Amino acid sequence: MYQGMPLPTKEPIEFLTVQEARLLLQAITEPRDKAIVLLFLTTGIFMQELAELTLASIDWKQKQLLITGKRPRQLPLPDLAYDALFVWSKERVNTTTDIVFLTTKGALNGLSERSIDHLIRKYAAKANITYKILYNDAVAMTGGQAAEGQIDPARITRQLQAEGVEKILLVSDDPSRWTGNPELAQGVTIHHRDHM
Image 1 (cartoon, helix red, strand yellow):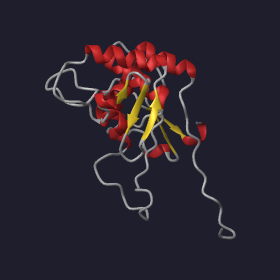
Image 2 (cartoon, one colour):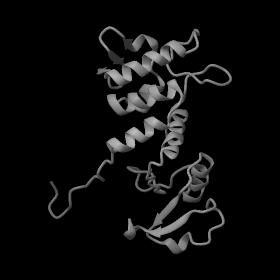
Image 3 (cartoon, rainbow, N blue to C red):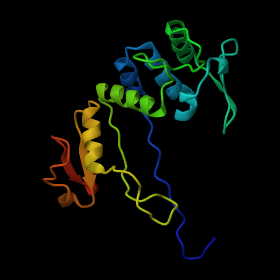
């Protein structure tokens, strides 16, 4: 340990409360989407693993998921997740692809991580659950290089609004930088981060 240097601290991980999880589940009407959310809530599966989940990786007899890849493991399926997955497996279109979660419109493809994230955000907005999105314009662990791409807080507010989020608050250490910014989505309120 280096003397005089503070230890790095991590932000606390925030979880949904039981009430928020109930609200989220109540907002979901589609069997596929209910199975996706219940797998997240009950198994600890990662987004990429969910997007790549195959029919062969479901052990119906042992009630578990057999995860391969970077973190191979067996994930027990609690009854709620098992039941939702079973319902979706019966409604799922019979196709040659082994991917569990398929698109329901257009060509049959496996859902991407982005699509899964979008549908969770859609239901969270419907359920009136608060999301916090941290924006940082530097890439971590690279010496503070600027992030690539065209994403910034104003664009994030417009994307959230397009996805149906009704109430958007922008919190900044310099609120004056954003006040009156025409690039922000309509109705965004601006606050100092000390008021969080």
